[in-house]
Image (cartoon, rainbow, N blue to C red; front, top):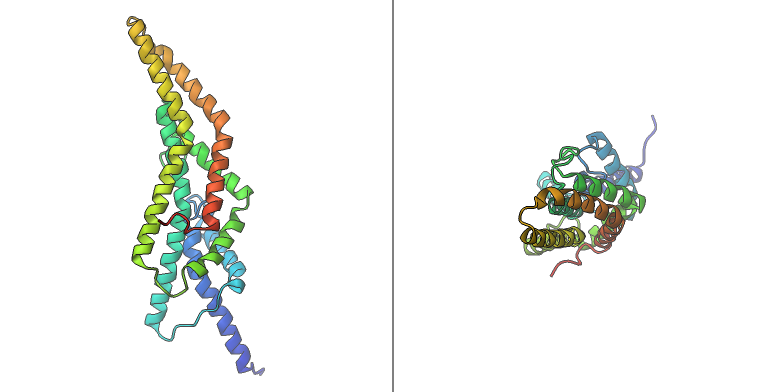
Length: 257
């Protein structure tokens, strides 16, 4: 029978604990992050992605001291899970920004009801197109690399095993929500401006020619205009969105007042 040296057993236990501790935070983050954490992605695939990220991040992560009791382990696991979910929700808010921008644009251009059930969530067609295009563009531009960098950076921002301060975490969450809605309104600005000009022109025509059914004349115009603006502005909108997503991954605490 081959005897395994005690040093080897101790080293193996340390490596396994390091991997398990990193996996707790990364698993929670991957479960809700854009692209990899979508509802259409099977759970087994998400677990496989979390394991792959943990294998990449664990060697570069700081060393963790193994808990000496079950209570300490439960507290450590809860802390790491909360931190991972918070960072994942910070990334998920960028998808919410695209959905909100598409909804604003669709309502402004009378396209809110077309293909409303194409996605898992009841979204207008514009939201579905923007979200699908944004996720594809983010993956093309290295979303997995940005995610791995964010995971490594998170251990410097939130030390392992230490629950983040509630006031800081709440301020950070409010800042992320505020930034997401500001980004959504910025992306939808061309559609809102076009809708304002259209409604002003329609009102002026209606006052000048009350007998004309301006709604029937203007409906095709605003529909075609909305589609034309989407075709022209979508590349710029998605470029701005990807840049904001990368900025968050590089410095997730930048929006904290």
